[in-house]
Length: 254
Image (cartoon, rainbow, N blue to C red):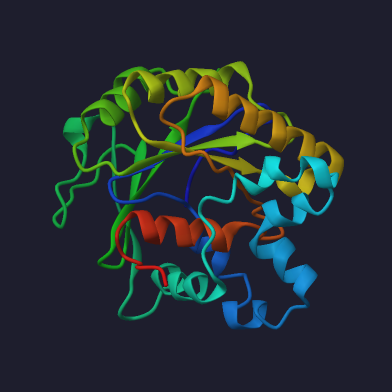
């Protein structure tokens, strides 16, 4: 998806009027999930369940700290079924729909009208719409507040908001702006920790535990489980896709 590049210490809001994400383009470069299932157990766990991989490096007495994070813990069969929603086929088209500047410019699907490219709408088959929103912080658009806050506050069919946080830098003051906005509007949201390939296991584990403590003690509307991901190694992407397919009501887990 066309979107501003994430900068160190910055996050981005991506929200969905049924789901959200930007993984379909990356998936075209990844292996089919049936090939993932052929990986050795340790490699498969690292790729599909990064929190479980981190848990292996904790002292046994501290392992419950990550065990409690695995609230969403689907089986491999469910994760494999979720992949079909994000795989483009002649019957499951993944297509750019429209862009909007403000809420009143948002498309009334299925007959959208294009506008200035600010909030980008992507239709994922017949299942849900992904909305890729502009970044916040010092590089945010001048009309960020009017555009994003109004959309998040008033969009009635919004199911979940995903906040992308740089897992190397941790939660920065710019991220707190987005967190406060979600909390103020009582929006259900999820933290996706990006760039987990950029740091050592020790640093990543430290960041995950600190961010999890922040979520537990400083937030009300954030989903308790973090989703660490890497667009480079594809770690965590399959699990996040399964989560999206589930919360949008498209996947009933076994």
